[in-house]
Image 1 (tube, rainbow, N blue to C red):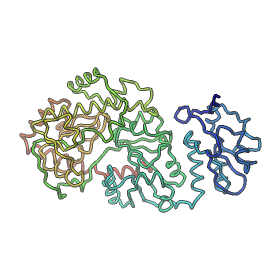
Image 2 (tube, helix red, strand yellow):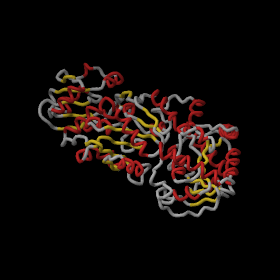
Image 3 (cartoon, rainbow, N blue to C red):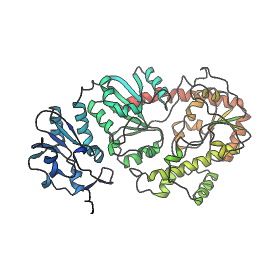
Image 4 (cartoon, rainbow, N blue to C red):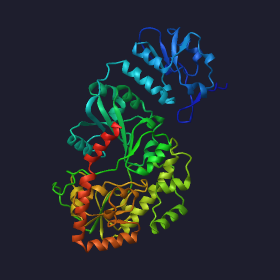
Amino acid sequence: MQRPERVSVINETGKKQSLPAGRNFFEVLPGKGAPVFLGLGPEPGNLPTLFPEAAQAGYVESPDFFRTSGIDKSAIPSEYTELSPEDAKQAIREGAPLIIYKPAGRLFPCFWGPVISQARIARGSMPKSPSPRTVWITGDENSLLVKELLAAAERKQLDCRAVDPENMRANLLPLLREETPELILSINFKGIDPYGENFHLLESTGTKLAVWMVDNPFNILSGLKSKFWHEVPLLVTDSWFIEPLKTHGAKRVEHMPLAADPVLFSPQTPAPKPEIAGDVVFVGRSGFPHRESFFAGCSMKEEEYTLARNMMARGHKPDFAFWTDRERPRNLWPSKEVRCTGFKAEECGRLWRSSCLESLRDKVTIFGDEGWKDYLPEADIRNPVDYYTVLPGIYREANITLNMTSPLLPAGLTQRNFDVWAAGGFLLSDSSQGLGIFPRELTKYIHFDTVAQLNELVEKYLCAPKLRLEISKIWRNTILTRHTYDNRIQQLLEFMEQ
């Protein structure tokens, strides 16, 4: 016997999705008065049978549900009255019983988010009003950038604390009942669920949310399943992504580069004196964590590797902008196709870093993971070092520190572009559009486009310690004046006031 075909809809991100039927796919929240259905499910004509207590009821349904499911409003019981989302919110505030079709919020999250968030809030003690100048940052003190941002926020006299991202995703409403911040800064959407349920809860409580994307934004967005991010104020460390993000629907995007912690990387801050065998130091991973699983199924043809090598030999880095222009992916979101484009940029970064380091084999000491041994088996490779204790001393003591920027960020920079100078060290960096935030009269002394240029600069500066020191002092003054995390916190506050 053939099973009946399920009713399906085209969800918010354009994918076909079937609708499960039955009472167990509804959540009932008791109250007083006539009940309100938040979503009807695939069999609206059966609702009076499933819910005899709802002989008369109001209902709210997404217009896209009717448009894509083929269900006509004539199938809805005549005893049910259609409500607008605002009418439903008023009924929720008045304590009406609610019958929620549980899959609805993940089919059309932007439609349902504001309504369902009101229902969640109304069914418990209300969150407190937002506390002025109170800021949460998603992560703990060992998470990316959190320690630096907390210190900078404290110097700005903000009441700031780190919040565990997983706890925030699972328990946001209870957390908000203990304290409601004025602003939450999420790094790379950490703490925000893929459907934006937390975002809508925050909107309902009056808490502002900003997301700072410090990696390739479209790699980050590939994990989201709703258009809610269009409404989130976004900050990016790479200005190249501003226009593509706006093209894909983002309403507010601003460039906010990385920066330095003026205390942590001060030459006066005590740090262990490292043992450095080479004249040149590179500190960095051979690839980002979980790289293989993130790029699962992605590949690069041999002729593409040849193209990349030839381009790099001529001084042109095949970065994410190059590969997106060459491959013309149908869209950068919501399709995960972007990851395969990003894989090619990431592979080019691996080739580029390996070429630069191999050319300095007899001069360079690498502090990084075991993965470097697969690419540079003859190199002097040391164990990874702690960012907050050992690294400042390495940058301070090294004759030259080397930086290569990931091609995943066409106009990006790395922490090295700030930290090395702040620590009183000397940096050679590959060319990047991102260097444009610094004065041209400074960058012209320290950037390279090819392996040959890198080797020329290394030979030049190893023979000129006084020149290195002079350049380092000028750079350090520039960083401490314009590019600390204190500067970035101020920019964040101004951005959120716009």
